[in-house]
Image 1 (cartoon, rainbow, N blue to C red):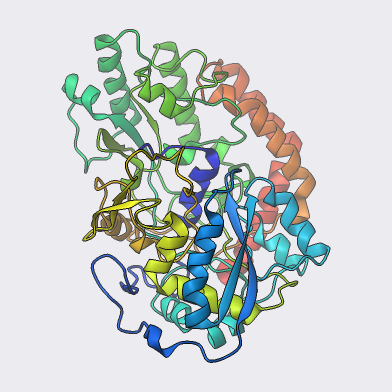
Image 2: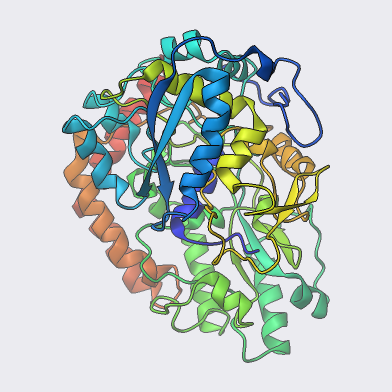
Length: 515
């Protein structure tokens, strides 16, 4: 199963699976195994026999989709309530919403008094919700209703660290199954082996060495375009997937608003003016002229996955985490492992919530109980999946069912402790994820724990977004002359106000970093 999918899912990898540690948190969080997790049990899990003796509360919880509501969502809701009503006195009502529509719907619902008790404003700006008073602070709710979440936080799990504004917590993330980053090229194993290129999984390769691989593959397969780049519709650079050095955009803000370049840097700079980015563009241009990049890379409707699956390309640039490569791929590392600041976001309690305490009890149980988390994530065993190897939590589809025909299949992993979520491939183990996390934890940027509010420069950022959307697709496909097009791009960014945005971002960084 290919991992490089919709841009929304790529962003999710960064926000949830590759989240970063915050100040004061452990670089190697303690392994807290929840009940029913593959490979162990947690003695802190209360017995179901204890039951709930108080009144039952009804909560409304948003259920994000990619546009299609699973037909069996009601069946899952009923199965969830068989557990939650008895154990914590909470009856759950899922409200299915497209993650795309949610950008407009969620703020409107809250502003008009629509009751929602627990909400996931996926990839939206949490600071905007906080600044407008749309969500409740969570510190007291967690302390009084969520002992297991409190335990995770104390042990260093980064589920709230990037979701603080002025020291107050406003959102809770899923526990990541890994965190970290590094630039890499995901290459088709058979092609690399065929041309006898000297592949070493532990080596960090240069762009020039990667170009040598492209040359060998092109010589063996003249009809191919080895470097699978697709820039159609790109609205900002994907340099972080190919970076040779740590890059931190500061809490997931757009990279055209300025970045920290290098793990030790405390200076916000224009990514697009850096020597590292210019070197990247020069190689893309050379690879395009050599026939290594598809001539329609900036206009094609194909995805990088589509090109690779069709045998048109040999791979694509992507974060070098284990989950990104399938059994038939090699991860060619281009830069060191590191941890940067993660974007704000997660589960929030809207100001229109009527049962905030019950909502927090529900979050606490889902994070604590892997069986319940997997029920919400993957459905009912025997109907929506079958267990192939219980020791590692490996599942597959029942006979005659696949991702397109299953009545319950939702790829958004927003719930609980994802280290103990069931997996669809044995190619990557949690041990692989833990090793990647440990390696990344040794190199952390200065942006960790820093947030950025763009409220002071909204007009400039709108203008910069338009400039990036105009120039980046052509530049990063290598299809235009750099001597002409690149200076125009840099000047257009200056005209759009990049210097003012960087100054604003630097001031906020200095205040938080030195405070």
